[in-house]
Length: 173
Image 1 (cartoon, one colour):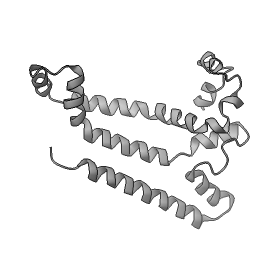
Image 2: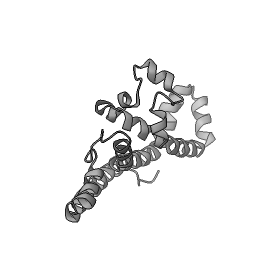
Image 3: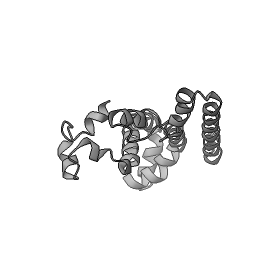
Image 4: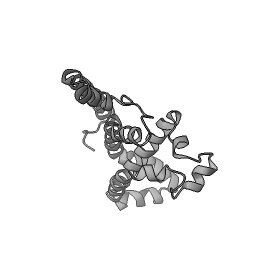
Protein backbone atom coordinates (compact mmCIF):
# COMPACT_ATOMS: atom_id res chain seq x y z
CA UNK A 1 0.00 0.00 0.00
CA UNK A 2 2.90 2.35 0.68
CA UNK A 3 3.96 2.00 -2.96
CA UNK A 4 0.57 3.27 -4.15
CA UNK A 5 1.25 6.40 -2.11
CA UNK A 6 4.87 6.71 -3.32
CA UNK A 7 3.93 6.25 -7.00
CA UNK A 8 1.23 8.95 -7.00
CA UNK A 9 2.91 12.26 -7.97
CA UNK A 10 0.15 14.27 -6.28
CA UNK A 11 0.89 12.97 -2.76
CA UNK A 12 4.26 11.23 -2.97
CA UNK A 13 7.28 12.43 -1.01
CA UNK A 14 9.20 12.00 -4.28
CA UNK A 15 6.45 13.71 -6.27
CA UNK A 16 8.77 16.45 -7.51
CA UNK A 17 11.13 13.77 -8.89
CA UNK A 18 8.22 11.98 -10.59
CA UNK A 19 6.97 15.27 -12.08
CA UNK A 20 10.53 16.07 -13.18
CA UNK A 21 10.58 12.74 -15.03
CA UNK A 22 7.35 13.77 -16.81
CA UNK A 23 4.80 11.86 -14.74
CA UNK A 24 1.94 14.03 -13.54
CA UNK A 25 -0.69 11.41 -12.70
CA UNK A 26 -0.76 7.99 -11.06
CA UNK A 27 -1.98 6.48 -14.35
CA UNK A 28 1.10 7.79 -16.20
CA UNK A 29 3.42 6.26 -13.61
CA UNK A 30 1.83 2.81 -13.72
CA UNK A 31 1.40 2.56 -17.50
CA UNK A 32 1.78 -1.05 -18.69
CA UNK A 33 5.18 -0.32 -20.24
CA UNK A 34 6.54 0.85 -16.88
CA UNK A 35 5.44 -2.18 -14.85
CA UNK A 36 8.67 -4.24 -15.15
CA UNK A 37 10.71 -1.27 -13.91
CA UNK A 38 8.23 -0.56 -11.10
CA UNK A 39 8.15 -4.17 -9.92
CA UNK A 40 11.96 -4.33 -10.05
CA UNK A 41 12.18 -1.16 -7.97
CA UNK A 42 9.66 -2.49 -5.44
CA UNK A 43 11.51 -5.82 -5.22
CA UNK A 44 14.85 -4.04 -4.78
CA UNK A 45 13.65 -1.86 -1.92
CA UNK A 46 11.74 -4.73 -0.35
CA UNK A 47 14.83 -6.95 -0.28
CA UNK A 48 17.47 -4.29 0.42
CA UNK A 49 17.04 -4.53 4.19
CA UNK A 50 17.66 -8.28 4.16
CA UNK A 51 20.79 -7.84 2.05
CA UNK A 52 22.08 -5.16 4.41
CA UNK A 53 21.53 -7.25 7.53
CA UNK A 54 23.05 -10.44 6.08
CA UNK A 55 26.06 -8.72 4.48
CA UNK A 56 26.71 -6.65 7.62
CA UNK A 57 26.72 -9.81 9.72
CA UNK A 58 28.95 -11.61 7.22
CA UNK A 59 31.41 -8.70 7.07
CA UNK A 60 31.60 -8.60 10.86
CA UNK A 61 32.38 -12.32 10.79
CA UNK A 62 35.61 -11.78 8.82
CA UNK A 63 38.61 -12.08 11.09
CA UNK A 64 40.41 -8.79 11.73
CA UNK A 65 43.67 -10.72 11.31
CA UNK A 66 42.86 -11.39 7.64
CA UNK A 67 42.11 -7.73 7.01
CA UNK A 68 45.27 -6.68 8.83
CA UNK A 69 47.32 -9.13 6.76
CA UNK A 70 45.89 -7.58 3.58
CA UNK A 71 46.80 -4.08 4.79
CA UNK A 72 50.33 -5.23 5.69
CA UNK A 73 50.67 -6.75 2.22
CA UNK A 74 49.85 -3.32 0.78
CA UNK A 75 46.27 -3.85 -0.29
CA UNK A 76 44.17 -0.72 -0.49
CA UNK A 77 40.48 -0.50 0.30
CA UNK A 78 39.38 -1.62 -3.19
CA UNK A 79 41.86 -4.49 -3.35
CA UNK A 80 40.83 -5.65 0.12
CA UNK A 81 37.19 -5.57 -0.92
CA UNK A 82 37.66 -7.36 -4.26
CA UNK A 83 40.35 -9.87 -3.32
CA UNK A 84 39.62 -10.61 0.34
CA UNK A 85 36.13 -9.62 1.47
CA UNK A 86 34.02 -10.56 -1.57
CA UNK A 87 35.54 -14.05 -1.88
CA UNK A 88 34.86 -14.58 1.84
CA UNK A 89 31.28 -13.36 1.36
CA UNK A 90 30.66 -15.64 -1.64
CA UNK A 91 28.45 -18.09 0.23
CA UNK A 92 26.35 -15.32 1.73
CA UNK A 93 25.97 -13.67 -1.67
CA UNK A 94 24.82 -16.99 -3.16
CA UNK A 95 22.38 -17.41 -0.28
CA UNK A 96 20.90 -13.97 -0.87
CA UNK A 97 20.71 -14.51 -4.66
CA UNK A 98 18.75 -17.72 -4.05
CA UNK A 99 16.39 -15.85 -1.72
CA UNK A 100 16.02 -13.01 -4.24
CA UNK A 101 15.21 -15.48 -7.02
CA UNK A 102 12.68 -17.25 -4.81
CA UNK A 103 11.10 -13.93 -3.95
CA UNK A 104 11.03 -12.92 -7.61
CA UNK A 105 9.17 -16.06 -8.62
CA UNK A 106 6.51 -15.24 -6.04
CA UNK A 107 5.42 -12.00 -7.70
CA UNK A 108 1.75 -11.72 -6.78
CA UNK A 109 0.88 -8.90 -4.42
CA UNK A 110 2.35 -6.03 -6.44
CA UNK A 111 0.53 -6.67 -9.75
CA UNK A 112 -2.64 -7.67 -7.90
CA UNK A 113 -2.63 -4.44 -5.90
CA UNK A 114 -1.85 -2.25 -8.92
CA UNK A 115 -4.62 -3.98 -10.89
CA UNK A 116 -7.15 -3.21 -8.18
CA UNK A 117 -5.94 0.38 -7.79
CA UNK A 118 -5.91 1.11 -11.51
CA UNK A 119 -8.72 -0.87 -13.13
CA UNK A 120 -6.65 -3.83 -14.32
CA UNK A 121 -3.46 -2.27 -15.68
CA UNK A 122 -1.40 -5.35 -14.80
CA UNK A 123 -3.96 -7.94 -15.84
CA UNK A 124 -5.05 -11.05 -14.00
CA UNK A 125 -2.25 -13.14 -15.49
CA UNK A 126 0.72 -10.78 -15.23
CA UNK A 127 2.70 -13.28 -13.15
CA UNK A 128 2.56 -17.05 -12.91
CA UNK A 129 1.30 -16.82 -9.34
CA UNK A 130 -1.56 -14.61 -10.48
CA UNK A 131 -2.33 -17.10 -13.23
CA UNK A 132 -2.39 -19.96 -10.71
CA UNK A 133 -4.66 -17.90 -8.45
CA UNK A 134 -6.92 -17.13 -11.39
CA UNK A 135 -7.15 -20.82 -12.35
CA UNK A 136 -7.89 -21.85 -8.77
CA UNK A 137 -10.34 -19.19 -7.66
CA UNK A 138 -11.84 -17.69 -10.82
CA UNK A 139 -12.00 -20.76 -13.09
CA UNK A 140 -12.30 -23.37 -10.32
CA UNK A 141 -9.51 -25.36 -12.01
CA UNK A 142 -7.44 -26.54 -9.05
CA UNK A 143 -5.45 -29.02 -11.16
CA UNK A 144 -4.07 -26.34 -13.48
CA UNK A 145 -3.27 -24.08 -10.53
CA UNK A 146 -1.44 -26.93 -8.80
CA UNK A 147 0.49 -27.73 -12.00
CA UNK A 148 1.67 -24.12 -12.32
CA UNK A 149 2.67 -24.07 -8.65
CA UNK A 150 4.63 -27.32 -8.93
CA UNK A 151 6.39 -26.05 -12.06
CA UNK A 152 7.38 -22.87 -10.22
CA UNK A 153 8.68 -24.98 -7.35
CA UNK A 154 10.71 -27.19 -9.67
CA UNK A 155 12.24 -24.23 -11.50
CA UNK A 156 13.12 -22.63 -8.16
CA UNK A 157 14.70 -25.83 -6.85
CA UNK A 158 16.72 -26.37 -10.04
CA UNK A 159 18.00 -22.79 -10.07
CA UNK A 160 18.87 -22.96 -6.36
CA UNK A 161 20.59 -26.33 -6.91
CA UNK A 162 22.68 -24.91 -9.75
CA UNK A 163 23.74 -21.95 -7.61
CA UNK A 164 24.60 -24.21 -4.66
CA UNK A 165 26.62 -26.67 -6.76
CA UNK A 166 28.42 -24.05 -8.87
CA UNK A 167 29.35 -21.92 -5.87
CA UNK A 168 30.58 -24.73 -3.63
CA UNK A 169 28.09 -23.52 -1.03
CA UNK A 170 28.55 -26.53 1.23
CA UNK A 171 32.28 -26.98 0.71
CA UNK A 172 34.43 -26.72 3.82
CA UNK A 173 36.40 -23.51 3.96
